[in-house]
Length: 101
Image (cartoon, rainbow, N blue to C red; front, side, top):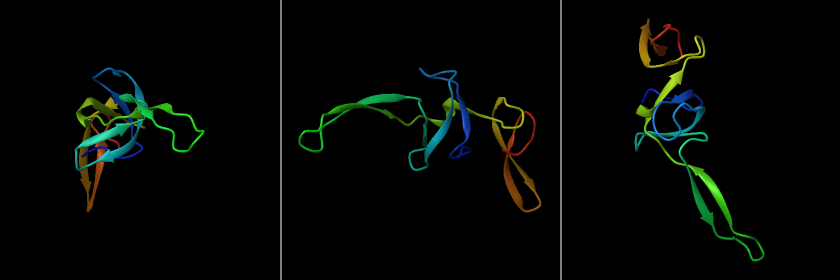
């Protein structure tokens, strides 16, 4: 996957289209990511102890990485990610400005 934890991203499809946020978690086994505040759902929680009240909690659900674009920290534009090799180092690069991500 070309995305990593703590990348700033722009959601390009779905109900949260246009929202800018940060990646919280990457799930490589399922090929999905969890983005902060995007694709949230409500879950009803039972009380754990006697006297405690139940509550409704919002939880972020995973989305497909094809539905986001990474925001380049250098040019501040939503861009695709490519790879560049210099010597023995391989790094992610912005497709618009060519700088390392």
